[in-house]
Every structure is written in C-alpha cells, then in structure tokens.
Length: 82
Image 1 (cartoon, rainbow, N blue to C red):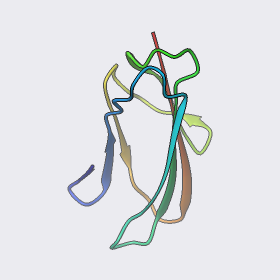
Image 2 (tube, one colour):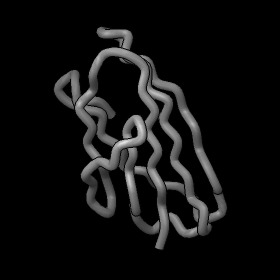
Image 3 (cartoon, rainbow, N blue to C red):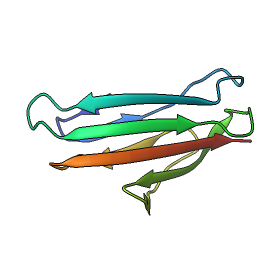
C-alpha cells in the first residue's frame, strides 16, 4: 500500500510453496515506476529476511518494510525465509 502519498509499505504474505511473485507498480501522481520482486528461495515465507532497493539494503521488520518513494525507475527485492 501507499501511505501519505510517498511511502511504499510492503507486508508480503505468500503461501510457502510460491517461489516468487513479481509486480510492476507506477505511482499515479509522479509516474515513478517500481518493479517489486518477492522471493521465497527456501519455501518458507515466515518473515522478511532482507530488502534491497536498487541494490542497497533497506531497513525492515520481520513483517514489513517502508520505502520512501522517489521519481524514476526502481527495483525492489524482498527475500523471505525462516
């Protein structure tokens, strides 16, 4: 979801047997594009293990991450695990 028009909040909840989900999001007001990949390499989606935004590690809790949205094109990779 988007909070306050500029924060992308991800709270992934996938079945354990889903290895990956990918979605493309375009912010309607700014046109910023986000390619979001949620990967579950171990078949256990219990918690967020890591978050990368354009290759840079981002802060997160076990259940969510909050990313400040900026203009341009971006790639987000959220890795789930035990």
